[in-house]
Amino acid sequence: MSISTRVAGFIGRRYHGMITFLVLVGIWAALSHLKVVPAELLPAPDTVLKTFIQNVASGLLGKSLWASLIRITQGFLIGCSLGFLLGALMGVSLTAERLFAPLINALRQVPIIGWIPLIIVWCGIADMSKITFIGIGAFFPMVVNTFEGVRSVPHGYLEVARVFEFGKWKLLSKIVVPGALPSIVTGIRLSLGTSWMLVVWSEINTRSALGIGDMLDSAREGGRMDLVIVCIIVIGVVAFLINELLGLLETQLQGWKKVSR
Amino acid sequence: MEKLGTLKVKNLNKGFRSGKEDVKVLNDINLTVQPGEFISIVGQSGCGKTTFLRLVVGLESNYEGEILLDGKRLNGPDLKRGVVFQDHRLLPWLTVEKNVGLGLKNGRNGEARQTVQEHIELVGLKGFEQHYPHQLSGGMSQRAAIARALVNRPEILMLDEPLGALDALTRMYMHQELERIWKQEGITMIMVTHDVDEAIFLSDRIVIMSSRPGTIKKIIPVKLARPRDRAGVDFLRIKEEVLEEFHLHTETPFSYTI
Image (cartoon, rainbow over all chains, first blue to last red):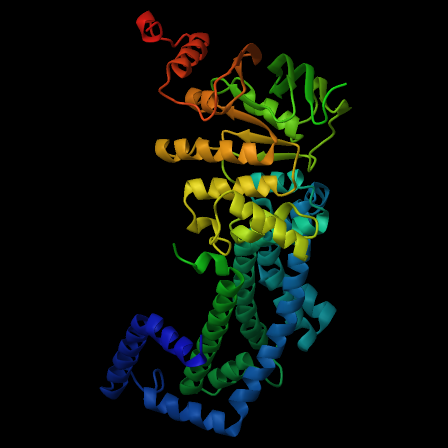
């Protein structure tokens, strides 16, 4: 499939979603232009657009977004891969499950806010603590979903592996991982969602020089609601696009599901 | 000296623990299967016929007695014994070709490809190599599962109600196919079924099992020329004989004394 047909397909699929979005912008424009809501509280769409262009041109928006994306990537990669490894280990080994499951089930109930004091004392307020927060947030959904995925591989398929005398590696690569894949992808999605939440949250909580969360909080302090809205839209759109990319990867990995009868 | 590929089951007993109770599933099973023979095991559900099959495959353990192949005690699954499950158990994420090649040690070399292709053709799935299981009908899925079980050239093929989920017409067609494959491969087949017609059509001997605990009630030889005529007098006579064991025969003596 060429890029252009993919883009066309994408727009086609999202067409109805676009309508909702445009209607919302229309209502927003009407509210602010008719001065139903004061401009300090809800700036007009064109003001927001102007602020967006200004901040793109100055490079501030790009740099902030980039700084946040780097933090997400680091925290997500660490948390998600550790989560995958432990989840997979617990899935294949009953001993590992007995050793770690109670601990994981206790710790994952602790809200992220509960970690603030420890993490800040241990990691300071620079990048390290933000990455740790994201790592913790990304870790738990991944552990749980990978574990569930490995365990949900039908027993019958494991018997097929026994009948054919599969070695450990063949068992994992041909049966366990493909069987657990839908659940693993769900884990990745949830991890990524949590990562986004936590990058903005941690940037607001422990400020840094650059970051989309910092930008948002600075705008709030300055009473710049137009800039706040710009940040919100940028976060939403970028997270949405990453999620779409992940969906594409998912269909690619599970090509066999796509083929229709 | 017995012929190579002889399966011998001696004084086989098997129980399960269910809560605090020991449930006896198989009681003193004795059976010798000659190489190249087609054996059907017929019984009502719960008579332990699937457990028996799983024991011979090696998927169940902890039994009393002996299961011997060429005089050697079986120890876990082995590529010498293939199995076709009732639910075909093809891996949904692999194509027919890859599913069939699953059991081969070196699935990628030329010889393996050749073997896979031969077996796909043997079961009549040529042209469907690149299809995924969900694109196949029930009968085609079972064909692929049969090819997958045969690809390692096992001495014995165990079939656990392989056609149970198919509609009646497809099933009859698959009987002919199974007979053709059995003849062509010259392999021993042991099939668990609850379809009496199926058992008579295919088997050299029919092992009838009774329930709780599972015991061999009777072994009925089927000495009819192949291919067999389902409506033939001899066929129906054997059917009466089998059904009698389940107290299901009809009291119409004329039906077989014409």
